Length: 253
Image (cartoon, rainbow, N blue to C red; front, side, top):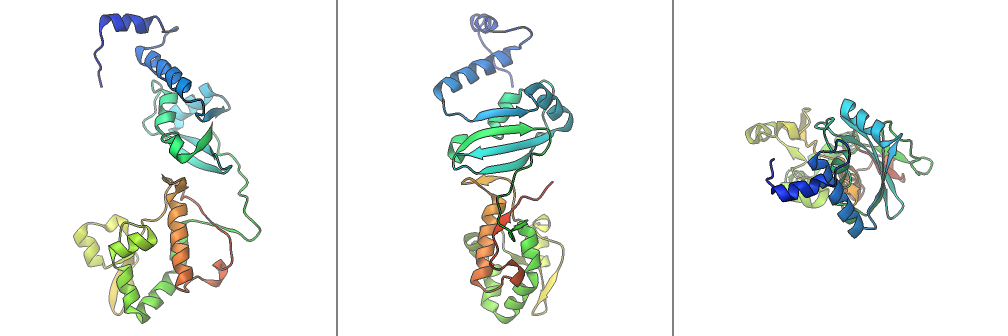
């Protein structure tokens, strides 16, 4: 993208440059100063071990770890994938347009960026379970199939996109026939294993979880909570998951 500016404005920008700073870096510096002045509650940003080493690592590996601290005291650790980041990229601009995008609505108070994955105590009680949503679903496939075989109304619900959106918070039916999947080009949205219900084959939707934040929670947390409630309300929850504190984690890339 090219932006044309007057010679006068160009000269004014040049007076604010230090060393080998480019005009873009000067503009960024002015924006940071302006935004910081108007937003005293902006999140604190820390780098481990330091900013120059962190940036060099990001240039080489295209990934790092972000530790997000929220106003309610909770902490969330996620991998930061920056596949387009290069030596000439602005680290600060990428931070504010990436990990700290919409920081106000997400109630983020601090961001710590590190080369190595930080160790955070889970805070879970003894006997608590950390699990990916997909693994919880796969563990209960037999129970769901058994219920569908006995209750055709329940089967119709799991085949209905609107019902699944309203009750499981997913964008596709939980169950769909291979023929429909092929016709709609949704192969990537469903697990490949086929299961038979009343002599008809079905595949389970795989579109659960993720690191995207919705209302301060990851999609994994949101989907996990909805699906766990569904299992409990329909008496489908396996004994090993009953009366357990559950923490739904994001699948590693």
